[in-house]
Image (cartoon, rainbow, N blue to C red):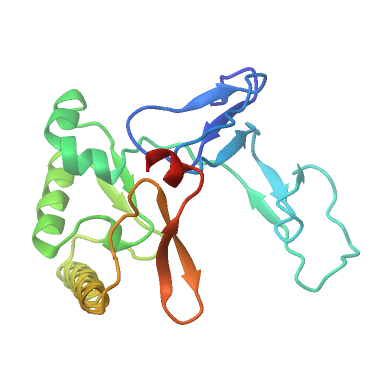
Length: 218
């Protein structure tokens, strides 16, 4: 991104392998299929200081800090980059064999914000950890310190087990709520073309006609 000489716009609410972007001077779409959300990408060299409480404004790190603030919640955060060789967990989980063949014994660092992001269950967690270790990789997280001693592994496996339980419990609760709502005569699946879900006072979200698409389809 830093090598790009001009600003550009990305579609924020779409995922996939394809990178969806357009130039700043390209016309915006007036008809969208899924309420596209656009974001302006502006590369900025760090380090710099963020105002945090003032809309995300920034200033150069070599400028003096303000001594008079307008709010007791004012914050000043220094943003400084740390460059590491990294790979997403998705790439490791879905294509780890191919990735490791292309990067044998490289210094791979996998950074996760929480242990629940690493794998869906304890068995997959242990297997993925072994795959990463065989490649000479390192697992890092701001919420847990990973280690190779027995105590660290015990804590890690317990946290992975708790994350698995929470995921399974959430799935059970969601399934039960959907089943109960269906038994009461409500739709719980994605809205068909021509209909949208709208909140009501006592019935939650109900399917309603989405005009003019509903009339065109009809």
